[in-house]
Image 1 (spheres, rainbow, N blue to C red):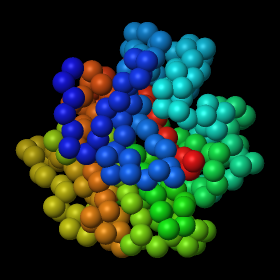
Image 2: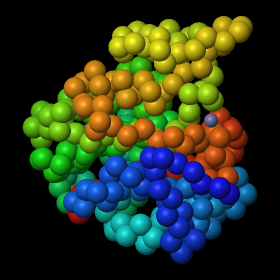
Image 3: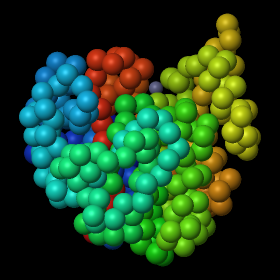
Length: 276
Ligand SMILES: [Zn+2]
């Protein structure tokens, strides 16, 4: 496998492979990681670092994968706190009393696709296999947010909601935020039908036509990372504070799981973000 990226670094530690954004590495008050397929113990279609809880993979293997991943990334296993993703645009504020939701204690909320916090000791976790992760860091107020944004989350602007709620709860100003997008399905690989395009257009994202390319037979290519970047720009984030991953999940199947590549026969990656 040849790894090449202008925006991300691949780290291999005890066989566990994880990605970080070059842009976020300079901020020492946070820790972040995006998992890859490398370094887990799951077999067959889940090979090997499967972090997907609800599937036919063995529960013990999934938990061991989490432990291996946390050890390699120096993230406290006990601090993991999960979304309850349904392609909604709902954002949940997490405090220390919520730590462990979804893994160490039962999930207590439905339809949550983004998490925010300003407390240390909490690792926000979202799940991905093509849908786009959005990492948001406020270096002024020391607050963070993490979102899962597929085409539904993009059309309902979960990224805009995340910023609005960070502003209300933590006084986070968009112009101060550092935002990183991806890895997810790239603009050459996300092919959809007209119905998806109609839903996306209802959201009135600026220059939206720039991110949609028409193909023959009513098919379209959609640039989801680009649309999410545009939502951030529309919300007041500085372009120089946004980094977009150049890795496509579908094109990097030896490194990343992809729904579009293998359908439901696959594991899932996790994005993690915490204050330290
Ligand atoms: Zn691709």
